[in-house]
Length: 341
Ligand SMILES: Cc1cc2nc3c(=O)[nH]c(=O)nc-3n(C[C@H](O)[C@H](O)[C@H](O)COP(=O)(O)OP(=O)(O)OC[C@H]3O[C@@H](n4cnc5c(N)ncnc54)[C@H](O)[C@@H]3O)c2cc1C
Image 1 (cartoon, rainbow, N blue to C red):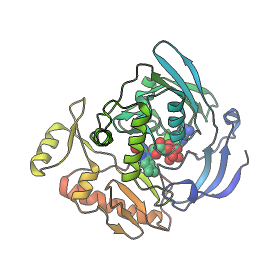
Image 2: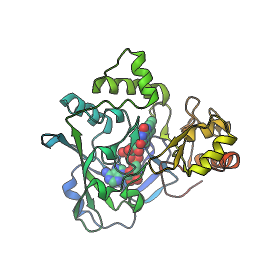
Image 3: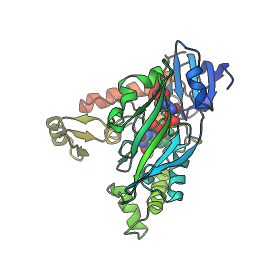
């Protein structure tokens, strides 16, 4: 591990926003973490696929690189599979499938690392990582002590966790070194998501295997989402807003066709992409940033876009949606630093 200064982060975030880290350390051995000197400002970096870098970062960026995955143990009901924080998420899902340990296939092809998965409780195609997490192992970088978190401790919710609620996703206080997943031996296909069911039907598959589900989702994701290596982006840029039932009812009456998804607690989730499309932003550009033509939830960098370009676009989309629907859109990625010119 070598401490570097004024380190460029442009290729380490999938939006390819330019920024320098005053100090940067690639950490490939988690045993060294408790010995790190205290630092005033710290940020933990995984694959950089859920980040908006607003400018240079004047603290220490810890880039998580430690690897390793194994079957920790098994019982009559489940396999308990552990992966290190720096493992690539998609590779880990494919590896677990190849070992005959299914259960994560709905989350295939999500960019980023295993260590970041609990931070926003990644979710796709009717599954959230928190539903499969058995425990999270993390180091408190202020005390150097290790802590093990149960799923209850993690306080998972929609794109939510303890790490976000405590502000550790910004302060870099708690670094996730490993995650253990509980993968039930009684596997059941999860094909509730309409697009997935339709894709399987198109392939003539009525009783899919875990690998067939993964293959179908890979096709769907490649069809809908731009590859960040070709068109820089950070995936879904806005969370789906959740409103109370009465608000949803009024909105649905005023806007026929509004997609509404009732939640277990009675609240209603709206589709942010639909709202953005209705206000005319799908496929539109503002400066060097724009909203992807095939998916209104994705904000893309068309080349050399900077933090001020992204802020202008986000503000414009948010205010148009607020004006037409009275709904606030909240960005999903983590914003770091402050805007520089
Ligand atoms: C094309 C595309 C598609 C996407 N699709 C989805 C999707 O379907 N569902 C979904 O939920 N997300 C999706 N995302 C968002 C993103 O992939 C996830 O949020 C992912 O978990 C981020 O991982 P990362 O390693 O890149 O994290 P980073 O972007 O590097 O960091 C994100 C946050 O996690 C923290 N963090 C990272 N590693 C650690 C660690 N080891 N310990 C503690 N904190 C850490 C960071 O400090 C930061 O706050 C998509 C992104 C892209 C670009």
